[in-house]
Length: 164
Image (cartoon, rainbow, N blue to C red; front, top):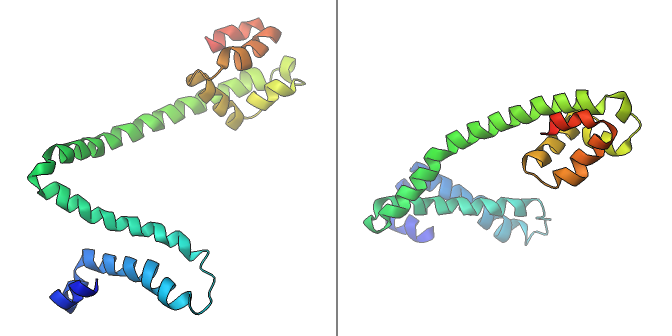
């Protein structure tokens, strides 16, 4: 930072990326380490801000984008960035489906008279949030046959239609 100030002068500081870089250097490094720590301040909460130093790595993106040696890497990064939006919408749709089936499971299983006194079933289907988590386990096929579906189907065999 000091060498850049010496080479480019004060004009360098007022460029937007350089202002952000200056803020990161001073807010996460210089002020806490050189001023507050010798003064005896507790820096426990300020140490979280040191993670912001990783934002300085964003400058590497400019180099990767401009150098011809990294053309394939830049194409890969662009592909990942362009696929983020469809992945987010896919996750939203998945959450909506989980919510719908969580409500259905709570009504069909958790609030049914046969399962009112069963702690095991109430733990998994007692409210919509628990039912959503159980439906997520079913969706990922995480031991669903033995620990989720069979205990319910032992008391009401008609629930096999719900689980299939």
